[in-house]
Image: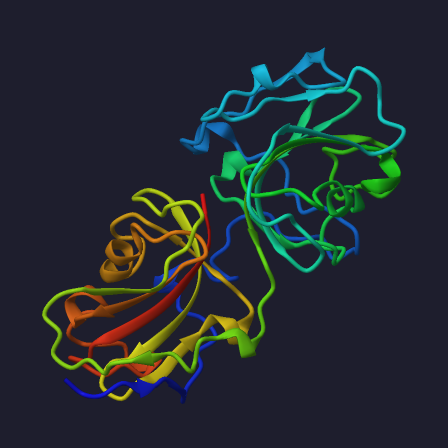
Length: 322
């Protein structure tokens, strides 16, 4: 076996679609160009998706939600408040755990939004089947979200009753919201991801080169104490993709400050990554050695810098799972 060699940076690639959603792949709502706006595109036709319709009601109302009405495992209903909000009202229906969201963190959330006055739904990520991710405190969402979601943890279910001045005011982004509307949101926080810098990448990690691997190799460098990654989950990862023979870095998500969301289901990413990340925990770092048949195949990925027949090493840190 060759002696350990320090991973060194040679090439950085801006995006690798096979390992998760890129910015261009995201079919979810796009932030409005106006600072302080919440992303929304209107309601997707429910007949065009298999995602269950979130419950809404034009007649029921609640000022203080009862957690009994929001069981785990079901899409939470979004009911209008009985009294239109004059100021931001934040109701934590179900607490989460782990890191408390702070400015600069990336939040990954599912949500349903209704008009507070009528209960009419104007947007829902559940209908698209893709959560929304945004950086907290940067004005990429309405002020009611930046304020109301601060301090929330992964797993939190939160109702936000947002007055007009903390929503869109008199300039709503679509006809589904009227000027001066207060808005009510039911938000599920899927993950809270702290900001990273290029310097946080584990480029000094000692790993062994790999040539001619016949099976998946799994080594835990650090064992996390958070939620377990299981089949069917979506894992939020920062990672290095490293060429096995010479240990050149092909992809560094720390350098991009952009974690990947990897659906842990066969066919959604590299087979070795799907298999190898299962059993890791949030907060942990795992090194995976992938033979070609569990990576990009025998032809490699020339555009990434991985030649035919080369093993691939993945250094993955788990930042969240949902």
